[in-house]
Length: 384
Image (cartoon, rainbow, N blue to C red; front, side):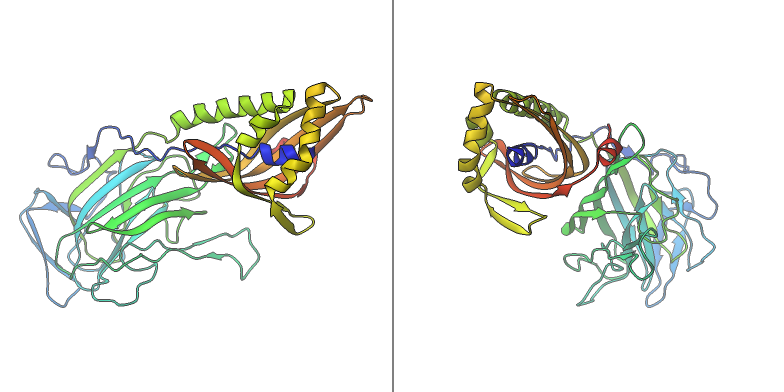
């Protein structure tokens, strides 16, 4: 009956991608740089215009509504960082760059959306406007450390010297009570001039050239200042409520039902958690087959549980969980303990990953890969 509970435990993780928002913060509100950490060279002007065919701006006035870092490229110019730190957030930006200029928006000071003069390019990469740079995992062997970024879905760049718009919807990495990361940072969407250029891109690590070290649950919004001139005339941050408040309640209720079905041997309840086209993968045996075939074979085990001939207890711990409104990928370890009539207790720890879908308002398991047995120590390492 172990296979039954392998599948069952993977069956209902839910995630709401609601963008419920808090109050929007206008970072250019007021006449000073009060929303930013103290910094030299960045200043406010009344007007900013690009110099044709040169990586250069001209400005006029002072203390106005436009923020600029410099008139020409200067590698000594600093990053501009907000005083306040953010996690989940929507950032909206209106910017102007001259020909050949380069900048970037760093969510949490660590994950960059590129700003570059990409106008007219037929082929774009992760370093172009709206791209997300790659990263490095220094724990990997030499030669395997590079993690590719994400090129924009389309080149939405306007000509240099024209005002352009960027909108970022970002989800911060997640951490448990012990400080262990449980989910990576995700760019839910990036739009350039109204066109979708990124969708649901996960950053396993901070992107290259990030100004702040490591990773954290919160961080400032940063603008790169040392790669070229940039002018900004609209800059807002809207903190987003943590997703899945309702979903968490749904998950808790689902697990309670799973535990009841396991404890009472409720075969029908178990079948209701499984998608009609579900597939199981036996990783150790390197085979896969339809779950409905296994359900027929497992029905006797549920009958034995219901009649009291077998007692089963199952619990689960997750390593990573990736979800949106209708799909989910979950991975971790589950523990399954059985006690037959002879009283001999057996406990198994199994590593797994599962794909879930929401069908007619109900979450169901579509695929589960039973990777293989692990140790009790590995199970304990995922303790909440």
